Length: 105
Picture 1 (cartoon, rainbow, N blue to C red):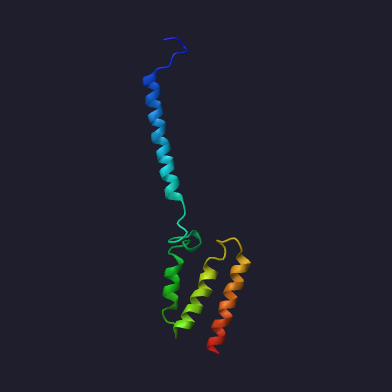
Picture 2 (tube, rainbow, N blue to C red; picture 1 turned 180 degrees about the vertical axis):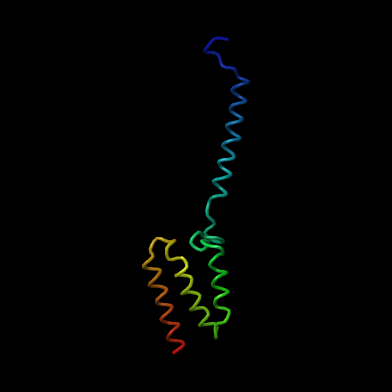
């Protein structure tokens, strides 16, 4: 076989190996892709998801309204460094905290 001829069997085997490799890469990309509905990254930092922390924290709230307001405060505080505008999230947390304080006064 001269230098210009291709070993078709060798080529086919290498092509199949490459396709297997690329399928693995595609599978990893799909697995890495963020689930922004069920487990968004800005709520999944730490040892448990933010929703679990919030549910546990508001369990003792004196009313549904105060529990909801506390939950909103916590939501914005827990994700403050993981989204694109920390100051905005802090202002939102403050807005809900001010409402919570008003309800309790």
